[in-house]
Length: 356
Image (cartoon, rainbow, N blue to C red; front, side, top):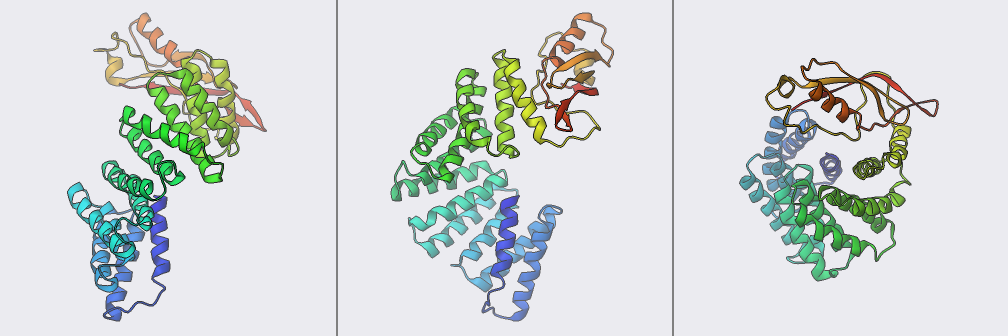
């Protein structure tokens, strides 16, 4: 992850500082272990985990038990462990070190707790991330107040985690409170966070089928995000709007967002385009048929506005009614069309396989 890569770079810079190690050999062994950890973080997790373990053990000897670098080494190692209980012991050890460095309950503890929680989120350890974000939120509210932008930023992260874990109703009050907080500020960070919160609230309203509320808040978020048309968050905002408009039966209004996405994507002429909006048939007639076991392949053309036209079944189905189920579904899909010389164009010979 980007966060893990930043840790690697940060640590390499720190190692340029003179350290009074017990021996030159000990420092060399630490350097080798840490570099091996960084070089294998994505390609060989097992080797990275063992290297992180050695780096942590050596780092404790070199830097001591009350050094921020030792805490970071503990976090690196813990993020690679599979057992959550073992991981939490190390994370708690890191927090204990931070408390020794910055002071228990101090304002300075907020950012280290947030960095720890963010690294856990990057590692998909959401339950543990929630624990440390909650600690950071408590400190932020104590030192800065409930309505502080820092508190709002932590609520935003907690709401995001809740949505990721499908705790939809837990997410809403956190995101709503974060939005109210960011609405009080006009600095760049708060404006950006307000837009991101709006996107997540739009996701909440989509999941709860409150499409009008989703439309309102997603359009508001887009006012900020449209300044960055190539950004991933802007693309996700437009995809959410496409879904809202399709759910509301307003396909024509979804087209503008299909075109906006297509205009900034560089899509080659090979292969089938990935849909931005799908409808998967949920028919009792499919149960127990070959279609359920093997899937159904459909061919079609995508026109210059991202609609499906001229669909045909490429799989054999011995039922006209069931065939129509799949043809009807594919015609509701929406795509970002390819662009040539600045203009949207049709894409022929497209295929999609319905799988169950």
